Amino acid sequence: MTESTQAALQQTQNWKLTLSYDGTDFHGWQVQPEKRTVQGELQAALGRLVGEAPLPQGSGRTDAGVHALAQVASFPLQARIPAANLVRALNRTLPGSIRVLEACVVPDSFHARHSAEAKTYEYRVLPIEPAADQMCPPVLARYVYPYSWGLNLGLLQRAATAFVGEHDFRSFAATDPDLATRAGETDADATVQTETRTTVRTIFASEWQEQTADGFHLLVYRVRGNGFLHHMVRNLVGTALDVGRGYRNVEEIPKILAARDRAAAGPTAPARGLFLHSVEYDFNS
Image 1 (cartoon, rainbow, N blue to C red):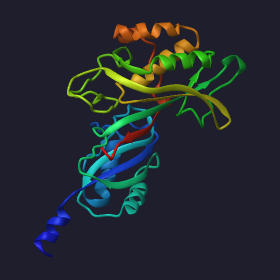
Image 2: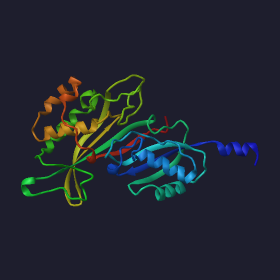
Image 3: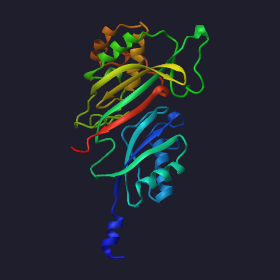
Image 4: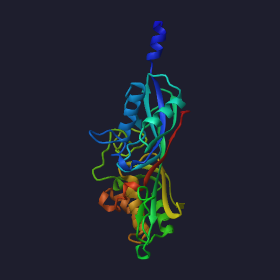
């Protein structure tokens, strides 16, 4: 083997994975000591398969119990393996609650978090009527928020619309949010845009939809933005639900935003109803 051939074999390739997972049994995405995490399972699977254990960088650090329909991760590998083979091998090695949907080699400049242009989250609510002996079925229990207050879809939509635009969302961040040195590098996720600490984010679209799952009527909130603070989506949902049940007026939302105080907003909706729906990238920029 010539030196040039050997050197080429040692060069790393930058990989992009798209994966889906049920977050119920994990302590979130990010590796934590002595805790089971999605990032940790993926790193261990790579180590078993190719003898390399790079730490996969996710598009965002989903919390414990939060699910993903299309999380994105990136990492370098020296091993040369066809993409289809890598997908098959990982899915045979990973636990059944994590599945790799797609794998491809991308430019070295690509980073799952830093290169993200936008993200979409989805939150699923199951309206139930305890007086009618309704209950959350086991098949949905891990993936929806059973909600026993009557909800007005029109009011939910008005609340969702009030979140659209560029705002300071400190009131909707976890208490003492973990702000990173760049906008968007929070404990939840987000797009990196500037070098300043900020709780300002832009919401491009925000709406509630009616859906049916396994014969049950759901209310699904979908929100697309350039980044989200820690617990931000769950706090938006909690506040919208307060509006939807008539506990607070939609006209309060601008005041909540202006307060920049977590105590001004509604409760944090449970993690189990939240899904990272998709992440967007511009490979032409």
